[in-house]
Amino acid sequence: MSQKDPCQKQACEIQKCLQANNYMETKCQAAIEQLRKCCAKYPKGTSLVCSGFEKEEEENKALRSESK
Figure: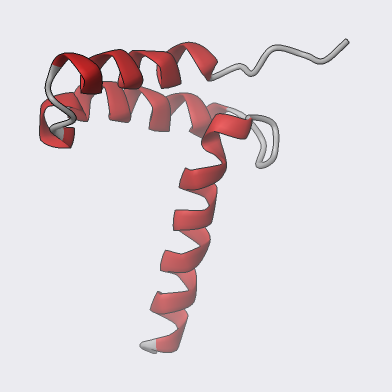
């Protein structure tokens, strides 16, 4: 039996917000921030819904190290 994703609730809130706001991401920043906060609580790889943020973070680190 697989374990429930710890940040699934926040991911669903983002989807609901986007649907309610014609997919205007700017109107859902609070929900996105809640997901980011949830993802920060758990070790990398714990939450599937956090994988996009983890990839974004890795790409940003790579860009910063290239610019040094």
